Image 1 (cartoon, helix red, strand yellow):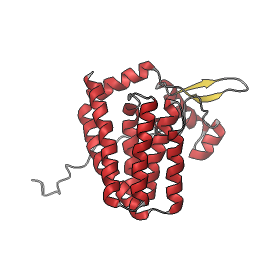
Image 2: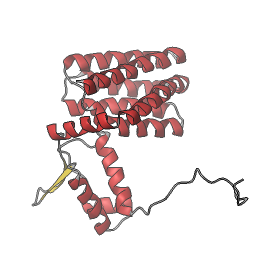
Image 3: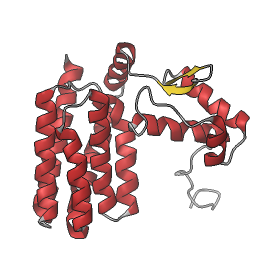
Image 4: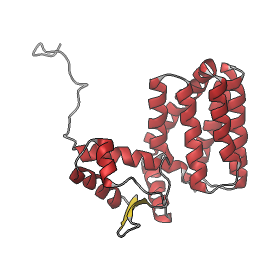
Length: 241
């Protein structure tokens, strides 16, 4: 109790009013960051977005305007026009690297959280696996094995990790992995991409799939930890350059 005999409510935080357009903006931005929508792909038309979000055209336009201001989309007029996702540029990479350096303590907290959550997610997936889900994991990893561009590779990598969280059959793991990937994906875009990276990722994913398929929860946990820990080390090398 406080001196006024009221409960201690020091854990409560200030709140701020958030417009509907802010919620729409955040959801669309998250989908772009997670590569669920790739560069040069087109967002659904305004009318469809209004239906998806149950919002007015004005509200949807406000959200798209914010995406434009952040350099994530461009709008093209005409018969073949629409709202298109912009490719990543050197300027965006430089801005991401600067943010990574300035907020490294926060990123380290996220990576520590990831090092705990994703291995346990793989462990849970090993306990809940089915032939159908194993086939889905193989299909996703086969897409990584085929020659592809960076953006497609990053998209398939995200889908692979999100699929494992889905197989774990725990909404808290699923939400946590999605949140983690939303936070770190811009940083992961700084990592080099070439054939060796693609092949190494494919091989490490195969080890994860095999351990999950065998329902070897201890190995699944370990190989997932080794896989994501190496990524953290590579990012540390980048910010020290």
